[in-house]
Image (cartoon, rainbow, N blue to C red; front, side, top):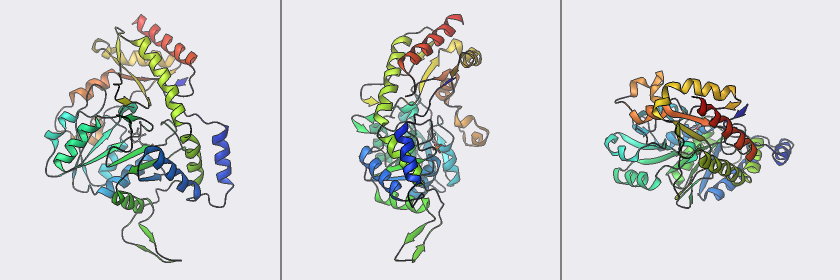
Length: 366
Ligand SMILES: *Cc1c(COP(=O)(O)O)cnc(C)c1O
C-alpha cells in the first residue's frame, strides 16, 4: 500500500538520534536549543519554541494570547486539534466557510467579527498558504490576532516570504506524516517576545529559573517539552526539508499535467505567488460523482493506494454541532469531493506514474 504521505528516515537521521541518546542529557539539552535556533533561522523569525506536538503548541499559543471566554474565528477544514485546543482554553470557535482551495474565505471573516473576537486561526490546507495579506489587513483593521496553524506548510512561502514569519504566531507539526518529522513533535514560531515568553511558561510548568536552586511559579503549566533525541532527528530532517519539498513538487507537477482537464475530477492549482509544501495532493470529484465517492475510494484502496480524506469538517463532528450557526456550504461541498492521493518524498517518478495510471484506470471505468 502506497500511503498518501510517508516519512523519510535515512542513515544520517538514525545516527543523529543515536548520538543524542549517548549524550548526558536526553531530555531538554543542547539539541533542543540548537533545533530552536536552526528553526528560527530557517523561518526567518526571532523566536522558535519546540513542543512534544503541534497540539500542545496550539494549546500554548492560545493560552499565551488569552482566548478564555472569547470567540475565535477559524476554519472547519482542519484536523480537530485546531479547534479542540480552543475549547480546552475556554474559547468559542466560530467557523468561517472556506474557498475552493480549502482555505478560510477571508472575505467572509469580517461579518463574523464581534466585540468578543480575539483571533483568527487559519490553516494552510495541503501546504498552500492562505491569502496572508488579506488576513493581516483584517486582523489589523479589527484589532484581532492572526494565528496560523501551519502544520501542513513548513517550508512553504507566500510572496517570497517563509510561512512562519507572516502571522502573529505560527504552529508547525512534526508528526511522522507532516513535512518533516521528530516522531511526535511541534513548534511555535513568532516575532512577538510576549507570546514567546508566555508560551514557554505554559510548556514547562510555569517555572521561572532564578539562581542556583531557586525558582518561582507565577502561573500553572504543563510538560509539553520535546526531548533531545527528537530534536536531534528534527535537526537532521530540517537539512533535507527543501529536498523533500522539491520531490513532492516534482510529483505534484507531474500529476497536474496528467490530470489537467479530467472529466471526472479537478485538481488544486497553486498560484505563482505561493510556494506550497505539497503536504497533500487532493483531487476533487465533480459533483455528479459525489454519490460514488465511497466506491471510488474503496477501489483506490483495493488497488494499493493509501488514499485518505482531509478532512471530515470539524463542524460536522458531534462535539461541535452546538457551535454551528449557519450551514457551511463550501466546506460540505469540499468534503463531498475531496480525496488525497499518494504524494510524498519516498515516491520515485515511477511510483507517481503507476499511481496516476491506476487512478486514470479507475475513473475510466466509472
Ligand atoms: C497534524 C495537525 C495537527 C496536530 O499535529 P500533532 O503534531 O499531531 O499534534 C494540528 N493541526 C493540523 C492542521 C494538522 O494537520
